Length: 379
Ligand code: FE2
Image (tube, rainbow, N blue to C red; front, side):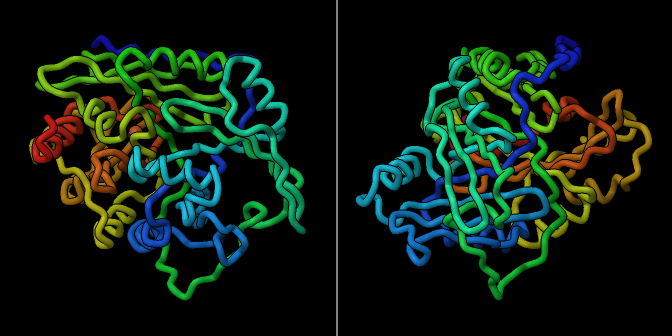
């Protein structure tokens, strides 16, 4: 196979230390309703709020949490009041609901920001100190693809719940969690010819390395194809695959995304669980829609993968995919886009040793995506 799956050893010294994902911030048209969707369907808890009632006149933000995953849903309440609020509203106009910020937790935000800018990152927010009775946070941000940014969040002198400005809430409505644990990886879609630009950016600016490469021969169906490189940070806690479209007979799923998102942006976030059968059963019961693969996939599965712990009938019933690599295996499933524009979706993943991304499933998966793309008239 033409795929290069040679793992590159981590450099001896991490030139851009990151502790982990801090939060993912979405700019949305109606944060109140989006928050209810993620609580009711995905089992997130609403833990804090910032809005007009708490002194933030121009915007509202809801902090949702499930185990280590933090989502912030932000909307403009008065775009006329500030440049920031106007920027939020403009983002929603251009992209629909989408990811603005893949925020990273660092020990020293000033130092990390200075290094990033020195190495070529474009600043969005100079280091800013936010204070309240629980201490202070230092936050800075720089641009990545499209209108997406990385905030750098320093919390070593902060003991509060999340961030100054947010007020803790304990709502009466608190549907149980579905077992989502942490962000496994976040995938960006970029324009044709730009994948290597962003691969170089992550390598040079942030000390990431290229963990895996999938070329257009690996990721191609009868109709379309794409190329992808997975970038990982020094401690492997952050993984950012970058996709670009490749030419096929018809329009690539990446092209469809770029059209509807009006440019590059975050395509999907993979959320990890310890019990994918239970998690996916619950998500389905709560209205989350998943892509399905043909039954032939499961007929071939046993021969392809050998023995696995989970009953194949259960996996087939739910549409969960399985793939193996030298370290073990993984189970994964993909939601349909979670909004009207065919842009952002989620992957639910359970790793049983495997460190890869399910390359053995790409064909079945992309054919499933293309069936949906065809229904939308975009293939
Ligand atoms: Fe993924």
